[in-house]
Every structure is written in C-alpha cells, then in structure tokens.
Image: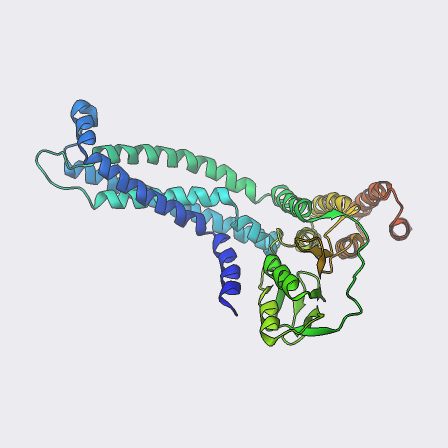
Length: 410
C-alpha cells in the first residue's frame, strides 16, 4: 500500500474516531491554561489581583483544595458520561443494528461535550502543578482558578443537557431520522438527474487490474485517477459498485488504453482504489438504505416484534426512494476538459427498491399493519412516477399485497 493511500484511509478513520474531537479540545484547554498562567504572572495580571481584593487568592493550600475538588468532580462526570454513551451504543446495537453505531459514534455534539470535560480536567491538573507556597501569594494563579470554577459551572449545565440529549439519541425515531437525513444529504451532494450514458471507449483494447486485497470497495481517489487518465489518454471501467465485497485477485478495474501503459502506471491506478470496512453513508447512499432496512427487519424479528418501528423505517425508505425516482449517482466521471474518463456502475431505483422492500415484505407479509402501510406507500410512489417508468413493478407489488390480504381474510 502506497503512503498516499495509507494516509487517505487512516486520515478518515482518525477524524471519525470518537476520540478525535476530545483530543483536539483537550489540547486547546492545555494551551488555554498556559495562556492564563502567563496572564496570572504578568504585571497586568498582578495589577488586576492587587486592585480587586475578591480576586486575590493567597492561600496555596486553599487553591490546591479547590483545583483537586474540581478535577475529581469532573472526572466523575466524564466517567458517567462515557458510561452513558457506551450503554446507548450497546442498546442501539442490540435493538436496531450494529451498522447505525458509526453515525452515533461520529456525533460531534457528544464528542464536544466529552472533550470539554477532559479539557477541564487537563486545565485543572496543569494549574495544580504550578502553585507555589510564597508568602506574598502573588504566585498563586488566582485568575486561572476562578476561570476553572466558571468552567466547572458550565460543565454542570452541559452535563444536565447531555443527559437529556443521550436519552433522546437512542430513540428509534431519532436514529431512523438521522440515517434518513444522512442518506438524503449524500444523494443531494452526489446525485444528478437521470440521463443516458454512452461509453465511447468500449471497442478499445483493455487491461484487467486485479484487487490487491480482499475487502469492500468503498471509494477511489478521483482527482488522482482523472489526472492519470488525462495524462495517458486512457479510460477506466469499474466492474463493481461501491460497497461490493471483492476478493483478492478478482479483476475489478478495466483500463482502456490507446498508448503504452507501464507496470508503474498500473500500480498507480491500483493504489487509487480504496478497500476498507465500514458503511460510510457520505461515500455511498446505498448504505443508508441498507441500515434502514436492517432496522425494519430487526423490529419485525420475533424477539422484538415491533411493527411500528418497521413502518417508521419503511416510511423513511419511501422518502428516499422518491428522490431516486428522478435522480441517480452519475455513472460517468469527467475530467477538466469535459471528457468522460471513468465509468462507475451505480444502483438504480429498482435495485434499491427490491433490496429494501422485498426483505421487509418477507418478514412482515402476514402482518396487516405492514400490508396496509406498504400498500399506501407504493400507491404514493406510483403516483410520483410521472413517466410510468416503474408501473409494472408497482402493479406486481399491488397484486402481491392483495393476494396476501385475501389469504389472511379467508
């Protein structure tokens, strides 16, 4: 694996880690403590403390007690908050889907709250190491300690809000809504209106490039790959959609060329393709459809038996399918001179429809609630299909649902 590819993959893993924001914020608090100490021991800081008697904290023992108490209290808050996050993640994994954990772990708000807690602890411990027993008391960082007290009050209010926020986070409605919005944003950012795409290089000679490792084809370095294609006047066909699991040694890329291609060029092209685990919805909207389907299937399982949650997921899927009626991920990617260089197969409306609706129907076809809600949803999708592109599909499903209703009534 080349250094650029390794950096690209692990950079994303680092910034999406639950520890990323807390680490950055804690470092910021460390800098703040240094700045406050410089202010405390500067002539301006000494003048402030001399002029305002209530800001004067001359007893080093009292200062240590305040800082130690605050540090201990915030450590307790942090432990409790982390415990709550872990409980919420465990509950979401057991009752909904392991796949939704990424969106919960990547939640920036709770990362910022935990970062502020940890930052306050770092700030307090750094202050604790600077207190000096001097009779004049001028080297007790009084200004920094009063700021610590103020930060502690803020932490307490944040903790109260954090309790409410975490309890809301684990609700089915919240999780489904978050996945739906992430998927919709991904489609709006990457999709365009459906159009015909014709390949102009199909008759050219080509070379097969095999997968260097087994894994999920997640993404590729578009900028670098387009630069290679433009420089060598070549074209790329990806054989699999994003999200496909590809075994090592399977041809995954077809390189169409008109001039000599070196082994080094082939390696450069291979290095632009990323294989890693996970389901990043921002890279592939299909993952959002999959997660909503899995939530619905888990809700319909005998152990949970919650058709209402399945219907919520079904409605979210219907909302996303409405957008896919007229939009699709572009299959052709163009270079700076508007020449098509890369072909990437993408999922169609029918692909997502069958992959999502069919499993939910198989699990819930004997439930009248599921039957009625699915029928109503398909009726609306059918009306929105203004060009009647998918009329046969909808009519086949109407017949299937009607037959199931008839069997139950008999």
